[in-house]
Image 1 (tube, rainbow, N blue to C red):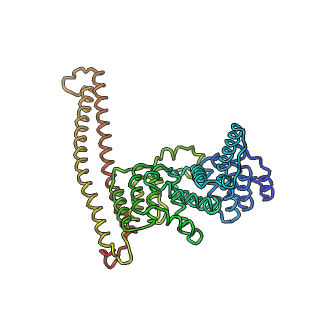
Image 2: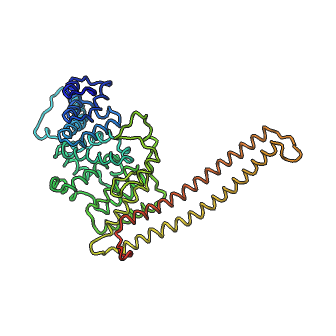
Image 3: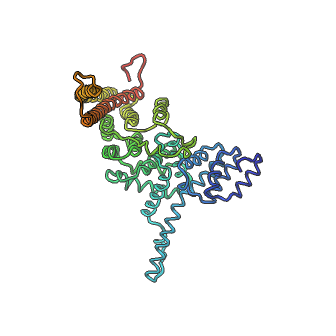
Amino acid sequence: MANDESRDVRKVSLINLQVDETTLPHLLVRTREMDSEIRMLVYRKLTKEKIPLANLKLCEIYKVVYDGLYAREQGVKDACVKYLKGNYEMFADKDEAVEEENEEEEEEATGRGRRRSKKGSGKDKKDVYQKTKLDILRFMKIFQLEKTLIHPHLYDLMDVVVQHLVHDIIPPEEMQAYLREFIRVECKQNSMSKLEPEEVFFFRSLCTYIQNNPKEFGDLISIIDDNFLSLAEFSKVLEKNMRNKDLLYVYQLLLIADMTLNLDETGRQSLVSVLKSFCLDLDNHLVLDLTDLHGFDDDEYNDIFPKKTEEEIVLQQYSASFFDTPIVQNTNDLIPICIGTLRKLLDDSNNAFTNFVLETISEIKETIERDVDDNRNELLSQKDKFQKQIELVEEELRQMDEEASGKKKGNKKLDLNKAEKEKKKLESDKKNYMKKIDEINEQINRTTIRCLYIACSLLQTCRISLSDPGNF
């Protein structure tokens, strides 16, 4: 199937392949087959055999989906979409099977048959929404979205997956019911905090896609415009949740804010205030857990889902274009989104907000500088104190070494056990002092880095006139 030069032999081998744990990896490799027809057969085989994506390794999941949806041939794309649709419908089939089983048990218990009226045969809108919501969540959780934050090409791939969910997989009437009920029920200050990050990602990606295709999704755009929160209300949601959730969740909320749906004057002021607070909140330090991301064996990576060291991630961050999807590891990586949104909110064709922009930049700068100066002076004072204590400890250790080696006058005998205990205690004290100094340096560096991120983001988002640098 893999090595024979004859296309027909490879094709027949694939068709007749008995898929099991041993042969499945060899089947997945053929998503890179030179012949497009054989690649289509791979996805059809996966669909026919009902191979769940959830049963594959994460690197295999992304490789199969990436090779299929980004294929040049439309036939391969369609076959991949059909395979994704089959996986999505697996959840729906399981739910319906459980529901039917429960109904049969109820009928047997009561001894009566169900009456099927026209009114009762159709699914209630609420039930349709809950079913669709659960199916979407289960499907999205297969991909472990938080891991895409350091793989921008996979993050973009998941946007493509959502587009196919909307366009080719979820029926239009179900999608309309889902979107309407999601906005009505979930997009509230208290309800939104209970959502999973995958649900917020799907909603953000859905809104972005339909807004970029108004002719095709005019009905869905109308649902958003008529039902979505005002910007003032959404600002409250953002303010409540930007410290209480994980990095992926907050990232998606900021992107929703960047779309500035239902923009109004009150909402503009509220969102500006919340975004500025987010930028200035140095204690809000969400961090992506890289331990889990790097916890696989080497054979669980491939060219689509490569293993990355922290050094490689940093290099990719600083070598990326401003227009690329960013790598997001911590709160600092979200600062450019905040500043970019502020720029949109404070900008218009008549330069009506120019003065407000300058005042906002000055306020950010002054607030940070004031906080940094106060904190830095206190931290540096503590650092000097610990440094002096370390010098004293090192001097005592030096004296003990000299006494132990007989270099002191008189060559007095020492209690070696007592000396060793004192030496270990001093070394332990020194280690603790060094740890405290490292913590102080980390706080100082965190403050400095936040300032640099804000300054860099301001420069990237401002249009500066070369003839008049003071004119934005």
